[in-house]
Amino acid sequence: MPALPSGIPVPDDGGLPDWVRPADSSSAGPFGVYVHVPFCTVRCGYCDFNTYTAAELGGGANQAQYAGTALLEVELAAKVLADAGRSPAAVSTVFFGGGTPTMLPAGDLARVLGGINDVWGLAGSSTGSGQAAEVTTEANPDSVTPESLRVLADAGFTRVSFGMQSAVPHVLATLERTHDPLRIPDVVRWARDAGLDVSLDLIYGTPGESLDDWRVSVETALATGVDHVSAYALVVEPGTKMAAQVRRGEVRLPDEDDQAAKYELVDDLLTAAGLRWYEVSNWARAGHECRHNIGYWRGDDWWGIGPGAHSYVSAPTSAVALRQAQDPTVETPAGVRWWNVKHPRAYATRLEAGQSPGAGRELLTHQEAHLERVMLGVRLREGLDLGVLSATGRTAVAGLVARELLDGRAAVGAGGVPPRAVLTRRGRLLADTVVRELTS
Image (cartoon, rainbow, N blue to C red):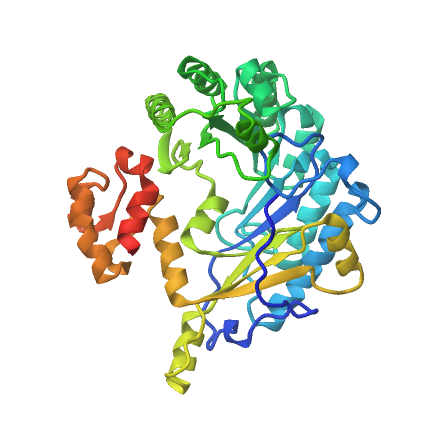
């Protein structure tokens, strides 16, 4: 697992900088909550997420007590945001990720969601307002039952995202995934019977995976009738078991042409089935996009609950303008990002002592925030308003259009729509290159 950045200290009470307090009563924007559940039955060889198996956990990290520990951070978050004048009007989205959140009993997940609703209210509920909140949990196909899915739906969950990864046994074995691929249609049916929207996550580029293997996986996912598919290229991170296998020559990674061919295949198959891309690695039928992840890509505020979880709160425009007027020589940061201690035991110990679990934080300059806005915004189907680019970035657009990395019609604007940087399919394959040139 990668080390956390060092950052600057987080106060024991978790208090936010005074410049995040709005200078007026402007309405709060969308607000998401991420809940990290760091438990897995086994550690997959390619995974570098902050997860732990039972054998890796010591005292003070009791899985059975995790829901109660997470709720302590929910209470802390409510106080910190209220003290900073940043309590959300309601929570727009909640996402339980991991790890494998459904390793916890469904009742524990429901209890955490209930605590979030109690302190902030979920949008569209009796305490919230506006569009109904989207509430997602990730799950492994072998970690749910029809009964557990009904408990989640009754508690207010609206989506489940299953880590399918592949439908081919030898590919799953290389990834060290434990589920039976024949179970996928069953779990999708169970979730839909419970009233939940369903997404399937796929991984392409596993060592030993052929193009035909990948086609089988995509077609198997589509045969379930799901409305959302995420497809990610395998990235082997340093320090993982698979990285060591690659270094020793035990497995061989595919080349870039293989990865590109598999991306084009999944895009062709999903598009033909009526799912359109809305982010470089995500496809959905209209109205089934993951709103929580879109919130990240658009720079919305969120609070991350759990060990190693990250959070972000932006500086209100009103506060920045007021401080700039008071002292033009001092730049108010664009936002603050922080992250929790990684180990579940340290996380629980701090919260039980009444302290913030924050390990460090960083203050984003406006230049850094701009870079992130371009980097994330350009990945979306809607693209990026060219007006947010620097003069150098706008100059680069023509060359990117000429190389067929950006859509030419979108770049000049049409039908009253302002000019935007919208990736072509070739541009999606080279998105990092596009971002570098737009921000150079």
